[in-house]
Amino acid sequence: MTLKDLPPDARPREKLLARGPGALSDTELLALLLRTGTAGRGVLQLASDLLSGQGIAGLLQASKEKLEGIKGLGPAKRAELMAVLELARRALAEQLRERIDLHNPQAVQHYVQLHLGHQAHELFAVMFLDSQHRLLKMEEMFRGTLNQTSVYPKEVVKRALHWDAAAVILAHNHPSGAVQPSQADQALTHTLKAALGLVDVRVLDHIIVAQGQALSMAEKGLM
Image (tube, rainbow, N blue to C red; front, top):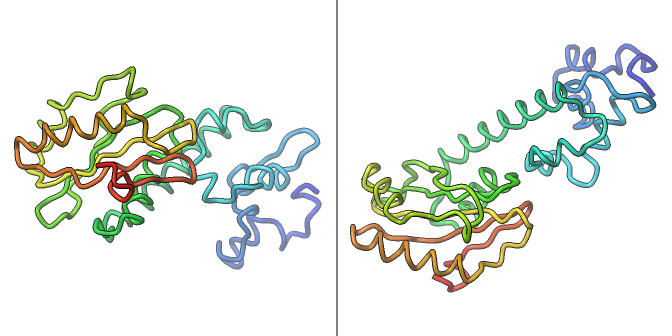
């Protein structure tokens, strides 16, 4: 069924204007953003297919490469959708940053997953914390698989001194979907702990995330 086949008061745009965005389903909201479907597949069906099996949360974690593989999403639609998803991620991250409890490993994992879980390439980030373990800044510092792209301890130490950090939480993603730390991950963690220890900065944890998964090396006793 196309939007034109619906009664006027059931069409997403008219429904939103009359009753507010809360009256629309996830599919209707997404259809309103997409505006048009494809030949043989109306916009409501396209929106439903995008959400199928993953919902809004899964769509927020979708990578650029995954969106490129979806039939019916041309460059214009894909760009608009990526922009909206990025705005949503930034809004959620901003809210989390204001209330994140860095003593709660699950909250930290959620925060890291929001930043890194949707990435199709490996990213290494550092959360710089003050003496009260409040978040000063999270920086994406290195890109590429850890055994191919060097993570330079000197650069991490320089940024820790720049932020006058008392502690850090290390984080990176595994685009493969497995969060089990490799030997390289563990070796890197110990190297950074030693380097940062020289300037009295503690490494509290190393979080590894993938889509829908997260692991705390500190919780697993791998620090």
